[in-house]
Length: 473
Image 1 (cartoon, helix red, strand yellow):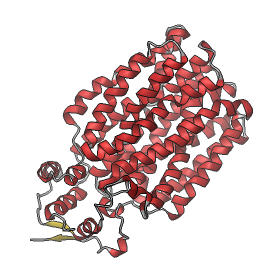
Image 2 (tube, rainbow, N blue to C red):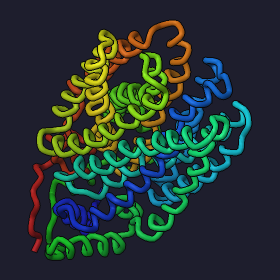
Image 3 (cartoon, one colour):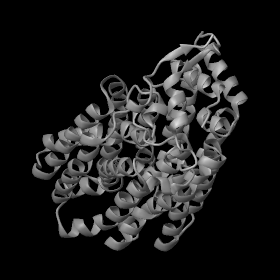
Image 4 (cartoon, helix red, strand yellow):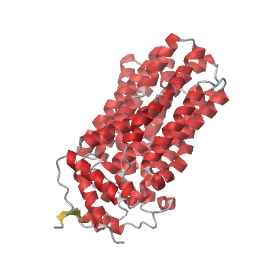
C-alpha cells in the first residue's frame, strides 16, 4: 500500500505540537463530556442508599438497580464503536449526551423498581456511547510525550466529578423527605443538556479519523492552527519514515472488520488489556455503587458514608492527574505496577483491619491509586489498535470489562454481602486486581513516548525503520 506523503507529513507535524491553548480547550471540552457522564453514572450509589430504606428493596432488587445503567452501557457500546469508526467520534458524543440526559430527567417521574430499572437501562445506552470517547479522541490528538498527561487531567476531572452527585444527594436528603429526595438528582440530570452547546460549536473531530476518511485539507487547517498557537512553522517537508513504514505495512483491508480482534497480534493485546481493565473497574463499581452501603455496615452514619465516598472520588481525581504526569516520564507499565500494588494494599487493609485509622488509610490508597488508575489503564487500550479499528477495539474492551465487573459482579454484590462480610469482598478484589493485571504488566507492550502509529502498529517495531524525521526539501 502506498501512503499519501501529505498524510505522513501532517501526522509528523501533529506529533511535535506541545500543549497549546487549543489542546487545553480540547481537554476542557472533553472534561465537560465526562462531567456530564460522571453526574449521570454517579447518582446510582447515593440514590440506592436512600431507596433501600424508602422502597424496602430486596437484595435482588438492589442488585438490579445497581447494574441497570451499566447493563445499558454495555449494550450501548456494541453499536457505538462501529458508528465512531464509520461516522466520526464527535457525532457519537453529541447524540449520547442528548440521549442519556433526557432519559435521566424522565427517571425522576417513575414510581416502582421496574420502571426505574428500565429508564436507567435506556439511559445507560447513551452513557455507553459517550464514556470511552474522551480518551479515544485525546489519544488521537496529542503527541507521544503528552498523551497520558492530557488524559490524566480529563480523567481526573471525571473522577473528581463523582463527588457532585454525592453532594446533591446529601443536600436533597436534608432538604426533602426521603420519598422525594432520591428524585432530585434525576431532575438535575438535565443540566448536561446545556453542555451540548459548547461541545457542538467547539469540539473538533479527531484528525486521525479525518485522515482515515481522506479529509486531508481539514486536518491541514487544524494542524496549522495548532502550529500557529505553538509558534511553529508550517513545514510541509517534515516526514517521519517510521510512520510511513508503519502505515504501509498495516493490512488495512484485514482491519476493516471486528474479526481482526480475534486474530493475532490483536487477540493477545485485547485479552491482556481487558483483564486489567476488568479488575480496575471491579474496584471502581464496588466503591462507587456500594461505597456508602459498605461504610454504613462499618458503623458510619448514612450522610457521612455518602460524603466519604464522594471525597474518595475527589481524591481519585488527584491520583489520575499524578498518574498521567508520571506515566509519560517513567513508562505506562512501571506506573501501573505501583498503582496496582498500592491499591491492593488498600483493599487488604479494608479486608483485615477495622480500626478507624486503617479504614481511612485504606480509603486513601484505594481512592488515590485504585480509582485513580484509569487514565493509563484506558489509554493503554486505545494504544493497542490502529486507527481503522481503534473505535471498535476501545468499545469492545470497555463492553467486556464493564459487563464482567459492572453487570455480573455488581449484581451479585448485595447477595454476597448477606453471605460474606464486606471484608471478604475486599480480599477477593485484591486477589483479582493482582491476578488480572499481571499478564499486561509482564507481557504487554510499553507504549509511552511512541508515536501513535508506531505504538499501535500490527507489525513488530523492529521490522520498521527507526523513527527518523527527515527534511524532504
